[in-house]
Image (cartoon, rainbow, N blue to C red; front, top):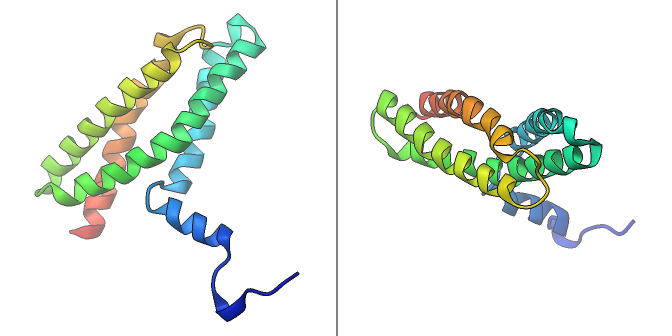
Amino acid sequence: MQEQKNNQPGITKKLLDFFQKFIDFPSAIAGAVIMGVIVGAINFGHGWWPAATAAMKQAAYTFLFGGMMIKLLYVLAGKIPGKTISVIFSALIVTIITVALVYAVHSMKGTPMPMESTLPTAILAPFGFSFLAYRRKSKIS
């Protein structure tokens, strides 16, 4: 194995550092697994392939865009003054964007039950985003 010259990080490290500016990886991974399993179970009555397609779409969306929405949530929570108002508005804004995007993803061909597949996000997102916004605002206040 060849050593890095001048103690500079490798390309993998550089890419990871770049993407960490835009995606909260721990939250993205946890959300992708949880939401992918839920959406797969919702669509399982239509067969394993449609359920797997819906689950993979949800997991991919949650990982990529969910991770970015959490970063947006952190920015909004930090910019909006007042703890209570900040938590409410940052969570509300990010929830509306997330639910709309999830419905759009599931409305594309491949998800047998797009409305039902969006429902878990619509139910869980406000609570999850509120918790994360509160935690973030508490850290910076």
